[in-house]
Structure formats: structure tokens, C-alpha cells
Length: 91
Image (cartoon, rainbow, N blue to C red; front, side):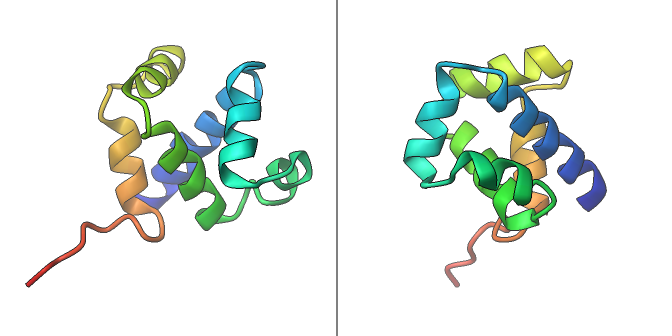
């Protein structure tokens, strides 16, 4: 599942980079630089931050999933497989 999560997250990163309106929002929200987009594209924690950002807005998730031909839940499933994505257990 981890490999497919990486593929989804890389696809989301590529989609985000191609969106001239949303990319600056991502960079501002995360503090990432354009250099980070290239240098950290293979970093599972950075990829998790890309998915965390997308998950802030259902419209972004659905737009990416339509673009990628993925079901709407693909982003959440990929996020769960990346570092920090496990549901917290409060017991």
C-alpha cells in the first residue's frame, strides 16, 4: 500500500505544481519553497504534507481525483499509508 500511496501523492504534487492558482496557496500554507518541490519529492513526510494540504478542501480532493481518474477516497487512503497518517487512538 505504501508504494501506491507514494504514487498518489506524487500525482497530487504534479497536479498541484500545474495549478497556477493553488500552488502559491500550498507554498504559503506549508512554508515550502519551489526548490523543496523538486528536492523533497521522494520524501514520504513531504508527500504526506501535500496530501494533508489537499485534504483541507473537498473541492481540491475531488478536482485532483477527477484529473487522475481516481476514486474520491484515494487521497485519504494514501494519506493513511504515509508517515503520520494512522488514526490516533485515544484509549
